[in-house]
Amino acid sequence: MLVAILAVVVIGIVLFILSFFINDRLEEVESQLEQLSITTMQDTYQLKKKVSVLEEELLPQNISDDAVSSQPKNNN
Image (cartoon, rainbow, N blue to C red; front, top):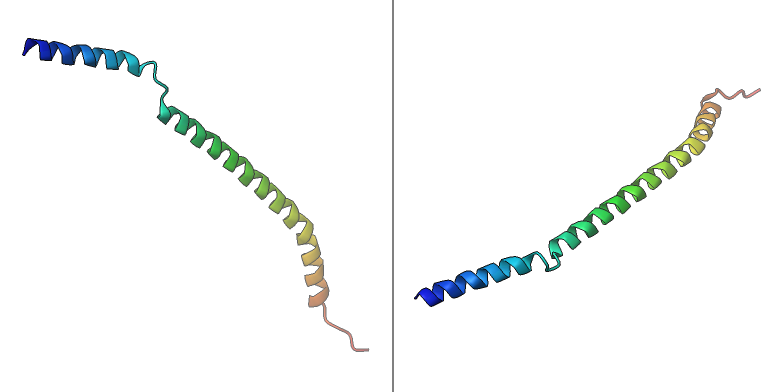
Protein backbone atom coordinates (compact mmCIF):
# COMPACT_ATOMS: atom_id res chain seq x y z
CA MET A 1 0.00 0.00 0.00
CA LEU A 2 2.84 2.38 0.85
CA VAL A 3 4.50 1.58 -2.48
CA ALA A 4 1.32 2.45 -4.42
CA ILE A 5 0.91 5.81 -2.64
CA LEU A 6 4.59 6.61 -3.17
CA ALA A 7 4.30 5.70 -6.88
CA VAL A 8 1.25 7.94 -7.33
CA VAL A 9 3.01 10.85 -5.59
CA VAL A 10 6.16 10.42 -7.73
CA ILE A 11 4.11 10.20 -10.94
CA GLY A 12 2.17 13.31 -9.89
CA ILE A 13 5.38 15.27 -9.25
CA VAL A 14 6.88 14.17 -12.58
CA LEU A 15 3.72 15.16 -14.50
CA PHE A 16 3.58 18.49 -12.66
CA ILE A 17 7.18 19.27 -13.67
CA LEU A 18 6.56 18.17 -17.28
CA SER A 19 3.51 20.44 -17.51
CA PHE A 20 5.80 23.48 -17.41
CA PHE A 21 7.76 22.31 -20.45
CA ILE A 22 4.90 21.12 -22.65
CA ASN A 23 3.64 23.65 -25.21
CA ASP A 24 0.28 25.09 -24.17
CA ARG A 25 -2.32 24.70 -26.93
CA LEU A 26 -4.68 27.13 -25.30
CA GLU A 27 -2.03 29.86 -25.50
CA GLU A 28 -1.66 29.28 -29.25
CA VAL A 29 -5.43 29.46 -29.76
CA GLU A 30 -5.63 32.68 -27.74
CA SER A 31 -2.84 34.18 -29.83
CA GLN A 32 -4.58 33.22 -33.07
CA LEU A 33 -7.89 34.60 -31.82
CA GLU A 34 -6.24 37.87 -30.82
CA GLN A 35 -4.59 38.16 -34.26
CA LEU A 36 -7.93 37.44 -35.96
CA SER A 37 -9.64 40.07 -33.83
CA ILE A 38 -7.02 42.69 -34.68
CA THR A 39 -7.24 41.88 -38.39
CA THR A 40 -11.04 42.08 -38.31
CA MET A 41 -10.94 45.44 -36.54
CA GLN A 42 -8.46 46.78 -39.11
CA ASP A 43 -10.64 45.58 -42.00
CA THR A 44 -13.73 47.10 -40.41
CA TYR A 45 -11.95 50.42 -39.92
CA GLN A 46 -10.79 50.46 -43.54
CA LEU A 47 -14.27 49.63 -44.82
CA LYS A 48 -15.86 52.36 -42.70
CA LYS A 49 -13.28 54.82 -43.95
CA LYS A 50 -13.98 53.89 -47.58
CA VAL A 51 -17.74 54.13 -47.06
CA SER A 52 -17.27 57.54 -45.46
CA VAL A 53 -15.25 58.75 -48.45
CA LEU A 54 -17.86 57.41 -50.86
CA GLU A 55 -20.66 59.09 -48.91
CA GLU A 56 -18.79 62.39 -49.00
CA GLU A 57 -18.34 62.09 -52.75
CA LEU A 58 -21.96 61.16 -53.40
CA LEU A 59 -23.66 63.45 -50.88
CA PRO A 60 -22.99 66.80 -52.63
CA GLN A 61 -24.15 65.27 -55.90
CA ASN A 62 -27.41 64.09 -54.31
CA ILE A 63 -28.01 67.48 -52.73
CA SER A 64 -27.50 69.31 -56.01
CA ASP A 65 -29.77 66.81 -57.81
CA ASP A 66 -32.45 67.28 -55.16
CA ALA A 67 -32.14 71.06 -55.39
CA VAL A 68 -32.53 70.99 -59.16
CA SER A 69 -35.50 68.62 -59.05
CA SER A 70 -37.26 70.56 -56.28
CA GLN A 71 -37.15 73.89 -58.12
CA PRO A 72 -40.44 74.77 -59.84
CA LYS A 73 -40.40 74.34 -63.58
CA ASN A 74 -41.21 77.34 -65.72
CA ASN A 75 -43.37 76.45 -68.70
CA ASN A 76 -42.75 79.76 -70.49
